Image 1 (cartoon, rainbow, N blue to C red):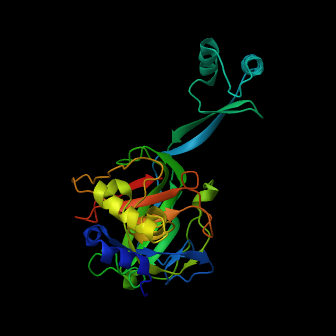
Image 2: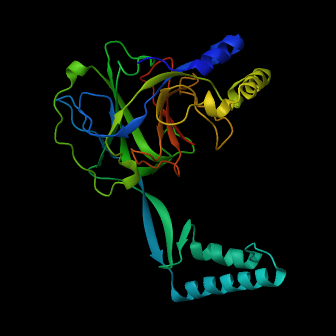
Length: 323
């Protein structure tokens, strides 16, 4: 795998102060295809140790619960809507206005539910429900060390397998402000893996959390951080250099988009959110899972799910973030 990154190398040559902030990354570039179990791939079959059961998630899952409104509740909400439309017409505005009293009435009717289905007139709320005997995990990604040599591989390990529970989760242990699939990772020795066993199929999986099988076309790049993770003066130099060369810093050389191993995370939906391991070390980006394209996933409203690991001890719990 030959690095193809002349623009970043030129930038680093002209501004050496950026070199300590550069990180190697591998753009995985998944494309539709039928992967073999012994190759790097998204989705598809995973070889598994013969003496190890397929993992299941037994934690609480966020399940949609619908509650039909009474005729009186529906009538009240329809009257509130009619009043808001009438006020908007009289004032010549496009905004939706309700009075404080109407807002309080609507809040009581919704009773903590987050969504109202105006076709079926049902309140929709998400509630945590435990799963017995557990939801089988779905294989998301397999990486071979030969395809991602830039990662910090544990000694004698040459395969990384990433799985997740294809159900919604909220408030996972150690994951602040997170809503999405529960992720599990396994470093393996290829010699310990046998043929693909009969993998249990999860029932009622969230369709957008089940990836289509894809082949990978990995390429090594040098990744640079977003503005929030650079000294302001140094970022100004890098941005000015990019403008002189007819490129945009954040689109061309920083926080590379798409599926990738390593590199830097972007913070395009929020300000910088430092993710620290329980041991106190600053967690480091290991993997970015992107939405759309050939794997046809959808995380965080077509965003990115990022997996961070402890740089001191890879056995420490993962940190997850969606942007």
